Amino acid sequence: MLLGAGVLVVTVSWFLLAFAEPAAVVDGHGAAGAVRASLGFVRAHPARALGFALVAVGAYVGAAVATTAASVAGAGRIGGILLPLVVVPLLEADTESFTARFNPEAYATCIGAAL
Picture 1 (cartoon, rainbow, N blue to C red):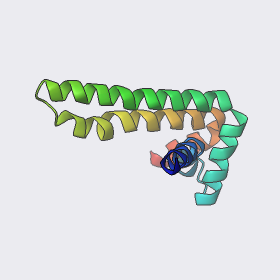
Picture 2 (cartoon, rainbow, N blue to C red):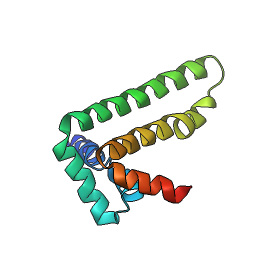
Picture 3 (cartoon, one colour):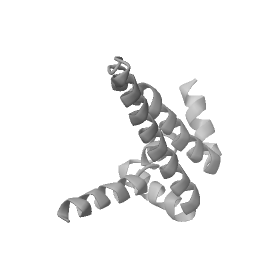
């Protein structure tokens, strides 16, 4: 029971903080401001945040299935690069697109500074 509660706390924390990194990078918030922005996004757009969570879970499950299939076929090492090189960057791009959609001025400033 204690393990289930721990898993629930971690899952809810991940869900609430999923948009903190793009808020820090794109919007230029500090750590506390990024957490507030992430919580604000989840509170203001719960359906979009839940949709992102479902996409993320689906991506990780899909990666697990692909890794298992590759292992059965004798190419199990592919699983080690699938998450960091495919799944995580796609999910990061997804969260940044949400940030860009709801704060386009900050995103344009961030892209302009990178160029």
